Amino acid sequence: MSTTRPTRLRFAGFLTTVLGAALVALGSVFAWATVTIGEIGTANTFPPEDVKGLDTLEGKATIALGVLILVAIPAMRLTPSRSGRRAWASLIVIAGVVAGGLAIRDATRSFDRFAQSACDKVAGEISETTNLPFEPLLRRCEEQTAGRTQVDLKPGIYLVMAGGVLAVIGGALSFVWAGRPTKPGTADPLDEEPAAEGGPAS
Image (cartoon, rainbow, N blue to C red; front, side):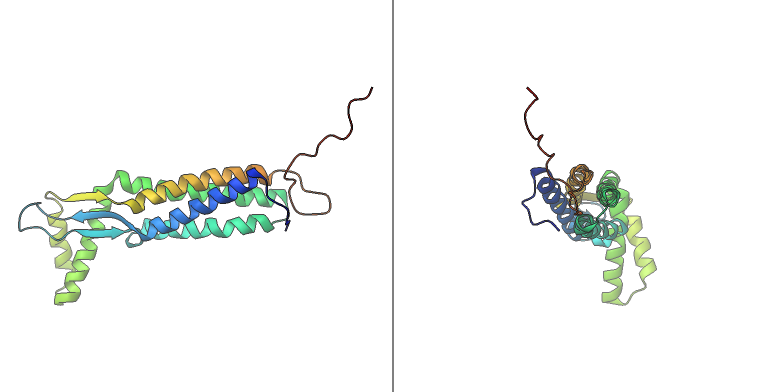
């Protein structure tokens, strides 16, 4: 690996990709929504329930994508071939699109997605505490969601969206950098185009 100072393009791609991956992973751990199940303002209401990204299949997928993006950064740097580096950069872009897309999809159908996840958590917690069967509790909770159930989106889901966008930008910048020709006798891409030697012929 080269020990020379990275160019602006390489540094911008690296920094943006790392930040995007970190936001995707952290956002997956944080709450994506708070759900209040039942008729708000009445006694027929469950306590508000936070739904974290990892409580959903999508959140598990986005944290895996965040880790994949982080792994792809050194892998791209260590890959000797130009096509291999571009493949890793493309993978970063795809992972960013998928992670951001999953978060956007859940945000646009937040009621259906998070009300069910909250019911699963509420029914499970009550079942563990009271030893009552899970299925009847889940059915009752699902009946309650037909009332005035409120779903409030939380910062975690927005962090994943932002991280996905940054990962796409970082992957695109890295793709441009990775496509540059390599230095003679090394696997390192040329950071700058070589300057023309000598002036015009007189």
